[in-house]
Structures are given as C-alpha cells and as structure tokens.
Amino acid sequence: MFNIILFGPPGSGKGTQSEKLVEKYGLIHLSTGNLLREEIANKTPLGIEAKKFMDHGQLVPDEVVIGMVDSYFDKHKDAVGFLFDGYPRTVAQAQALDKLLTLKKTEIASVLALDVTEEELVKRLLNRGKSSGRSDDTNEEVIRKRFSVYTNETSPVADYYKKARKFKSIKGEGELDEIFASLRQAIDKAMASHHN
Ligand code: AP5
Image 1 (cartoon, helix red, strand yellow):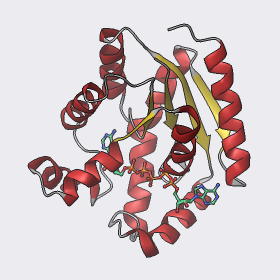
Image 2 (cartoon, protein in one colour):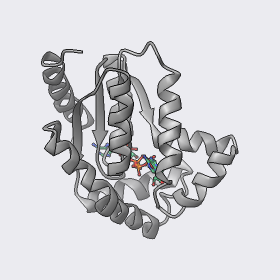
Image 3 (spheres, helix red, strand yellow):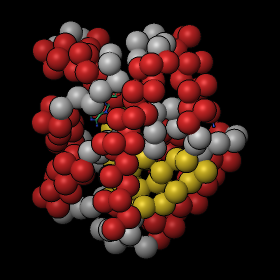
Image 4 (cartoon, rainbow, N blue to C red):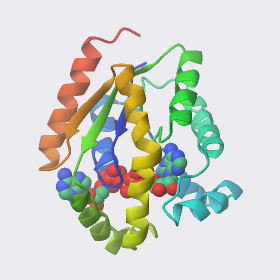
C-alpha cells in the first residue's frame, strides 16, 4: 500500500488537489470533512453531533473522527493506498492513524503540506461560501476560528511528521496545474523510495 497525507490550513486546496491526485494514482480519497458532511446530510446521530462543532469552526472530538476513519478504512480492503485529506488534525489522531496502519502492515509514505497565506485563504473561503452551502464558509468569524484551531491543535501534527522525516512543504498559491505538478513530483519521488 502507498499512503499519503495532504496537509494544510482550511482553504489551502486539499480537496481540489485530492480530486486530481486520486484520479492520477488510483488512491482512495479519505476526507474526514466530506465524510462528516455526508453524516450531516443523512441526519445520522454522528452527523447531528458533529454539526454542533463544525458550525462553530471547532474540531469534532477525536474519538468520533478516529472511529469513522477506522471503519472507512476497513470498507476498502483492496485499496492500493489512501490519500488522507483533512486527517489527522490532532496529534492523538496522528497516533491513532499510525496504530491503524501498523496493524495493517503499512505506513504513511509522505505528508505534503500546502503553504498559502492567511489573507488568500480567507478570500478563497468567503468566495466559496457564496455557492458551497457550507455554513462554516459564510461567516468570517468562523473562518478565523478555524485558523486559530489549525494553529493551536493541528500545526503540532506537522512537527510530528517532521520528526519522522516525512513532511514536505509545497507552494499552494498559483495555478492549479502548477501546484498539481509539484505534488506529483513529490509523490513520484516518495513512491520510488517506498517498499511496502
Ligand atoms: P474540512 O472539510 O476538512 O475543511 P477544511 O480543512 O476547513 O478545508 P476546506 O475544505 O475548507 O479547504 P481545502 O483545503 O480542502 O480547500 P479546497 O480545495 O476546498 O473540515 C470542515 C470541518 O469538519 C472542520 O472545521 C471540523 O469541524 C470538521 N473536521 C474535519 N476533519 C476533522 C478531523 N480530522 N478532526 C476533527 N474535526 C474534523 O479549496 C478552497 C477554495 O479555494 C475552493 O473554492 C477552491 O476552488 C479554491 N482554490 C483551490 N485552489 C486554488 C488555487 N490554487 N487558486 C485559487 N483558488 C483555489
């Protein structure tokens, strides 16, 4: 299996680039944001609980998200690999992911982090909010809250993977195709040195 994490703040282009990458490499796209929004749309108990946090720009509790990821992973036993988008977002989630992957005799090959300035991120999210129907995109206060959550709770995840020498920063501003090319280059390099 070949597994990668697409990392970066809200609005950095993880979802946009994931779509292109899963098509190119045949990986399974595991976006916790998308999975949670599906639960909300289906009005499941998990979705109703998660919505309370998402509407305020806060993280959904670790145990909820970790359980959801573990069961999604198990539903795709024949996958050639996974592209994790928006997960892990806390050090506890990163540890849980390591535990899951070790159990499955695989690992994270590389963490690719999209680097974008905060002003550009706010612009992108407010713009997306005009049409996305996402309640967390329409209010600038909620967007700023998502950034502070990212700084306080998610950026330690970057240090976790830097220590493991798996972290690579990628310029996330500019043309979509240029960013896609940088990601491909990093993935091809990681694939060439990957052995399981
Ligand atoms: P999630 O759905 O993961 O949202 P996010 O991280 O806030 O990221 P976004 O989807 O907003 O941005 P993105 O980086 O995917 O960018 P995109 O490609 O869409 O999470 C939502 C909520 O769910 C969280 O706040 C939390 O409550 C909860 N949650 C999710 N995962 C969780 C977890 N693991 N633990 C706990 N809670 C969790 O692009 C953004 C916009 O920019 C688009 O309009 C796009 O068209 C545009 N764009 C993209 N690239 C470019 C470019 N190069 N130039 C110009 N515009 C661009």
